[in-house]
Image 1 (spheres, helix red, strand yellow):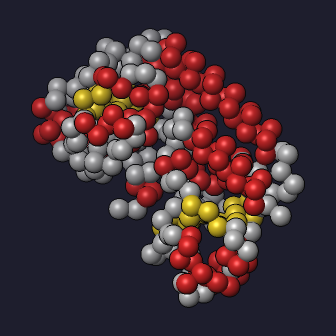
Image 2 (cartoon, one colour):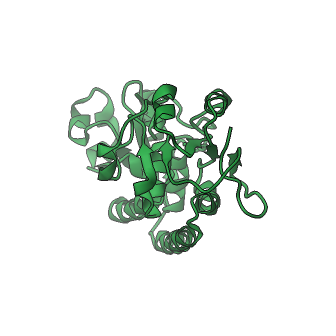
Length: 279
């Protein structure tokens, strides 16, 4: 399964006016959660509420505590298993789950909260929503403040780079895919002081040709699935200056493709790499 798919009756009625970035159907603050998107699982754990999660997806692997939790499928969830767990809230990601899945869950009488988390701005908007839904407003407020302070720190560091390096991020090797300007990866590269060489493409994760990549000849190659040590032995890749000059690095995909509080770790890592490799 491509990295981009990893990477999302009743749901909490929030006190006060509804906040942007979420859609809900009824109910009280949740104690038994089923998370159907790995990024939402991470966020719940980051708020210190991981003990409320009773099931996750087949694609969850962070934090390590999720390994002991029941699994309820991948992009297509196992509705019977979810129902058997008696959750009082099912968390969905609007970028991964369509109306069909939400309607099916609600038709089973399950509470649903749909969160939009495609960008870092979305993440900052949804933190208070999730905090309200879980009765954890204070934790969400503290997490949001720390995240925003971290973003400011990254922006200051990015301004100290000698120049904005031209960067290619490999998202998938066969076929070759990269990050277009609609992706979180593009946002992270740009916020970290780099220039995404495929930022002119409107698709989220477009398929490209090696010939076009050679024509664009980025300064830095960041790989999420390919092995940097093998690139010089792959036909055509040796023509890239970044390969010739050793400006190729492996990148942990979850830090850049999933909008979570760990995105800040991804940003810091990118700024460090750009400072090390930009010439």
